[in-house]
Length: 472
Image 1: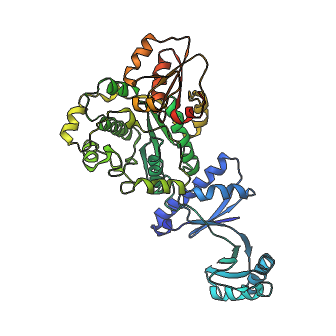
Image 2: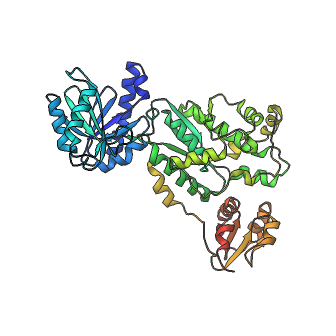
């Protein structure tokens, strides 16, 4: 059996504590039901006791369930007196302490004729002769004895959980999710505070960037969104990007894109009852995240915008991402690579408002699909990822990088093209041939492929890094 401990929940008032305990239990049970694991439980103040024949399953899920401070695999006994406790500990751990230094740590709750210190001494005496002695500071093995009324729990380790509050105990939010490094960490941090998070993703090159985002989202949600079947809203922003690319005179395109996402998220708050919007923004990290720009974009948003990374630098976010197993070293690139070279850096609200009035949200942002977490795998299988690591046969190759990069290196038969001139390829291209587009990180080329596919072409995309591995 397993002992599950929480800390912050125990600080709440009686009614709130009981409610959060039950939410935590339900989140654990939902995992067992989805995996057809038979799991029983009981609880007392500050402890949840779990019983199952599938120990490996609990070792896997408990470290990732919010609200759990720590847990232990334990042996449960009933006892009559302190001598019985010592005898049970000797039977269980006499061989374990052989030639090892050990320490006994006892806790007690209830009315007894002995103290926790008495238990430690009694068990220590029972094990001492087969050990290398007692070492309270740096033992080779720790023997824990937890007494609750007339029950004894013996174990040797406490495994840390993520802490925080149980998911779904503190409302719900919609997270602006890019699939990069920042937004998964920001979403994780808000979920850790008990908030159930749905995701809002704007695709600029569906399905290529959608597939990548879903891989990142699945990694986050499968690990940490236990007990909640998240919604994932996938939007098509290619119309907006096409408008911006074709009209370089548009000002503040980096802010307009973000502001339109804010507006869409606010509409979802109204429709679905979200309590706020989550972003991965950090002051000064990119041009859209200066304090002036954040203030200008937020002024017309009437729901709270949660920015848990606001004081992080990039290195801190990356390190945190790695520590919670959310880091992906590869990236399809950020949306800003598709915008103007001179983005708005410190834009006043009235200037941004004037430009925003040119863009109708319903015209430029369209919904593709709303997924549930449980449907990610099947949806990913249903959409075709056009990314390749080699050159397809009968292929026209188009290099979308800048001319300087093209002059330094390019595939021998590749034609250098600015993505703004893609219309000429669509209008005059050969539909009997394959087309391969490549750029630095893949986002520009994936966007080109999405337009080519819409116009009846067979097209693929790759990156400079992948194609440099090919001899040509």
